[in-house]
Length: 275
Image (cartoon, rainbow, N blue to C red; front, side, top):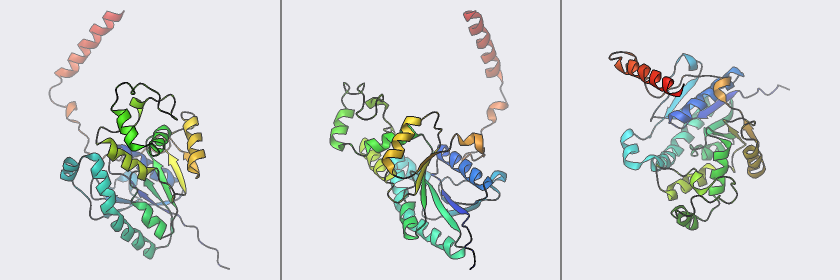
């Protein structure tokens, strides 16, 4: 009997924002060093450009993305919601094409906020893995907030006397410590969280954190989500990767250097003052 060949390609789907792209590409580099082929499926908005760090990666761009104008007009949260709505069909088409070319996909690893990938992964019966680029504690908070009564929560968040109270189930975090967003309304963030923490189709959750830092939050997640939870950070120590979405501004290194000498003088003043 012919031995079944192991599937060694992993599809990564990063969120097009710097703080999410960098750890995702670091994860891709670590997986590549472990022997996997990497395909990065990205939106037209804020695409990662191939570089020497990722010369062995395959980059695919799905159509129908949004623009900077959309981000400005919609705001970050509604931009994220719409991005997920319009990318679901094009990602399904892209994934289907990949499978027609070569049936070698081991799994799809997607940023927790790129939840549009779930439908296609389920349809093609591919394992999907959620990647949380923030922290285990943030994921715990999102999971708890998904279960609150929205109307009561909105009232509590507007009450100044409640802000310093410990939030039930998240001791020692207070109401004002919760990861609600300045980029949109509380209603919008709760809508996003309900999608982010819905992991019914996921095979595992991986988090860019370390068990030595977040043992209690990781234990809580492992008990609650009913799928394996892996802490694999800090990724920058395992696999550094240059993945800036913006051209690095080095203009401060040339031209008028008076600011530099002003800083030196201020440093001397402060040093003398504390001796």
